Image (spheres, helix red, strand yellow):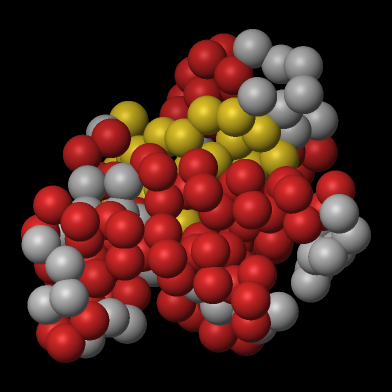
Length: 168
């Protein structure tokens, strides 16, 4: 079972925040991955990344040793962490965050409440809505965007997610 949320937060120190997220994940026996929401084009983007990553782990075709990092690769549409981390990583200061939480047996609504409280985040799924700027930040050019109507922009991102399997 997984849950995807959008949130706004103020990240004072990226390394400390990541350490605290890892510790929270460990304590609660869950998987959490946090992204810069400015590069996420809707919940389907993260759903697709999660499903591809989970399948790769099950089929032992994964590139990384953790589900969190595998999700990151797929969400970024990249094969290497050295490219995926800077691309999808959130920034210090006020940030729009996309968060995916996975657990086999937990009530994720309670976990979301704990996360927002413990990390002082404001839930806001609007930060997950992509647009033309999202595509540009993701690395798509005008020529690629012109191949589809605006209603199909999300498909361009989903294609990049799916292509990770091919470039692995």
